[in-house]
Image 1 (cartoon, rainbow, N blue to C red):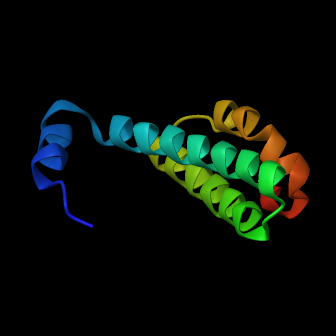
Image 2: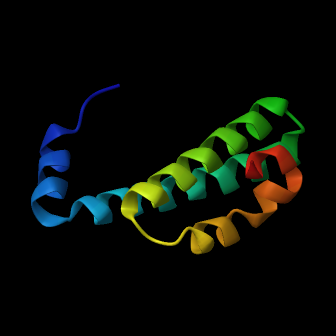
Length: 88
């Protein structure tokens, strides 16, 4: 694992705080959906737990982005249906 300081620096210079969190929110939402897909393919609970964790990260970053979370929540609807407590 390595740090990507130069890329992070470029992000800081080219995006607002809100844009950085929005980008992170959508990345975590994508990971949540990918993990859910892997769970459905493999039935390995690890992927289900990861989907829940990643969905929470997406919601958190969308809040930091300062916008309505309905778009993220809509994108994560299948995760919330599979893991009802994920919506708490």
